[in-house]
Image (cartoon, rainbow, N blue to C red; front, side, top):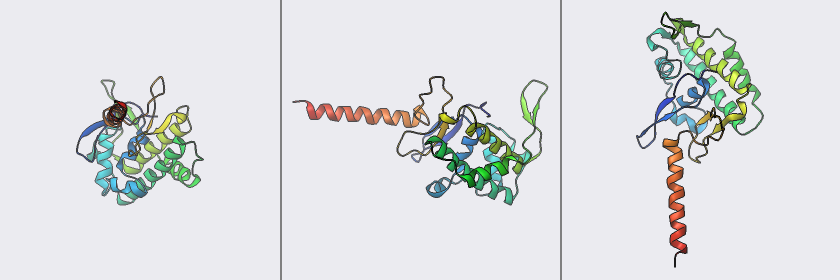
Length: 204
């Protein structure tokens, strides 16, 4: 499982920015949209959009060196939607959907991105690369996560109006929110208002 990046910068409907670290590459991919009601968050409209995501993700790929075809874009959306259903099933202890697992395994069976090391000791990728290689790398990360020791740490944000899924990699394992600066703080504000309302109703 790839866990070398601090997270993605996301934007709320109100226009504010916050950093979301889902803890795994495959869960970063979920921020590009999804099935059903999540379709309103779709960002993969053209092949270049997948390359742009690869740059902002922990892959940190140069988008000009990732070749994505129309078929690979459609495959990306299918894989992402399958990952959503598997992630939610995992987070809530439900059986993993067989059709979606098949979609993941099919993507993972293709050649992945080729990791390399530079002269200064940094990680790089063998480029140029194809979109299917990026998708295989995402799918293999998902196989490792959902079949590995952190599968029981995959969680959905505790906020009722938040759809984000993350893997809790913290030592105590008590992470509840997608980000403290977003849903964590909103929960604190709601709790404070509720306490004040209770105090006002009970004060003679």
